[in-house]
Image 1 (cartoon, one colour):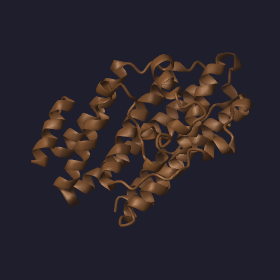
Image 2: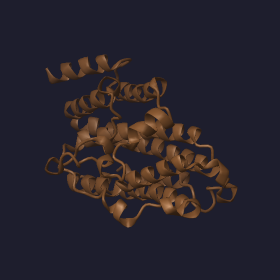
Image 3: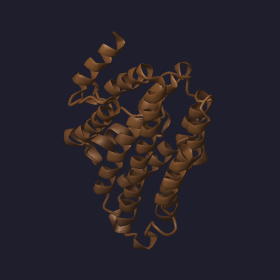
Length: 274
């Protein structure tokens, strides 16, 4: 089982909202209304770990090890929402999310192949690590800069945990796992072609609710993510290349084959299919 060791390693790295967030260093003149609003949107987005966890537990009913790990992932992701909400309640209470706004992102996700979902969320953690690093750099208020740095480090650790389950899947399911991971890897590393922020919270997950079946579509401002990425934290081509590079490097290690481009990964996928 992977869960016992993952629990211990994540427990050692866990930060405290009381001791590790420098609340007393808050500088009100360094927090703009524009910045505070993005904090609200990210807080609500992080709250969507709730329906994601419900999805994982439902679709992995036969995998108690991974399901147990969800207890740690869910706790830490909800903590992300909580620390962002706490920040707003302390310093910008009029922008703190309401219970109704939070509950709006709790909706059922359609069943999906567990291996593809695992890879999707691995890529999401790789991307979110970079998004939050940029957010920390963009913000000018020291407390929120520190919070985003803590969140970024958590997302990187979560990605590492998912990777361990991906390695186990390849050991157990071989080509089936490689096909699932390469298929989703091509999709999630192709944001440059789609012109869209490819993250689990921005993908359609419930046909019956279309088009309001993405997490982002259920936020108070469904269009905020693109503006945040393009015009605020400025997640440019260089930043995007770090995401794509991270996905390709990890798949290279998993598959024992070098992928320098998405095209090479796609060729590998086609060979597996054949």
